[in-house]
Amino acid sequence: MRSISTLSLFLILSVAAFAQRNVRDSIIGTPWVALHYGGNWTAGDMADRFGYTNHLGAMAGYKTSRNWVYGLDGNFLFGNQIRVTGLFDSIVDNQGTITDEGGFPGKVVVAERGFNVNLMVGKVFPILSPNANSGIYVHMGAGYLQHRVKVETQDHVIPSIELKYRKGYDRYTTGLNFHQFVGYAFLANQGVVNFYGGFYIQEGLTYNRREVFFDRPSEPVPTDMRLDIMYGFKIGWFIPIYQRKPKDYYFN
Image (tube, rainbow, N blue to C red; front, side, top):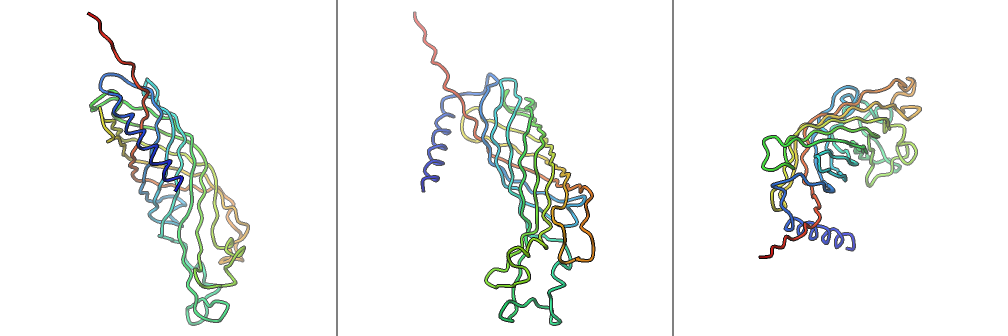
């Protein structure tokens, strides 16, 4: 409840800040806080493991009075299109089922999970825009990427894939991450309709971090660098926080 109240207060103060400024006539330096969603398809080595991937994240940074943007970007990655085949073949019985500790058929659910964190730099070019703070928006960044196959047994206890044994199936992978974005950012002259959207691509230079894959115990785990590519779109809503402008006084 406390976090909800804090968020509500923040939004109220941000809305109040919008009523105190007008960005029509000048470029304004301001903090940027953004929430965004991205839908991404996979390519390179990433496509061997996962299909369509969702990005849900946030950005916190600063837009300068010259329309440069600096910030920290983070995304939670998730999806349900797992392309790794035969992951549990070694523990499936001749009936095609995986049994739990009581000998009953168990249910195993797999999903994609991961995240990235990036330092980013960008710029807004006031082209086709209602004011000098809106326009073509480009940015790029570099940071850290992690992804894995999440294995869940839900209400069943299946000893061969519980606790530490799950690590043998999860394809845990980490490494460097790079991304690029080109799109459009819109800051209303007045009001809270402030958003951006465009094309997004990221490249991960990653490595497998497990020493063995339990579904392929006789094969060595590849140690070569992977190229994990995701590309698609990203849309976001951001809250620029402006300082109150001093009032003008006129005397006759």
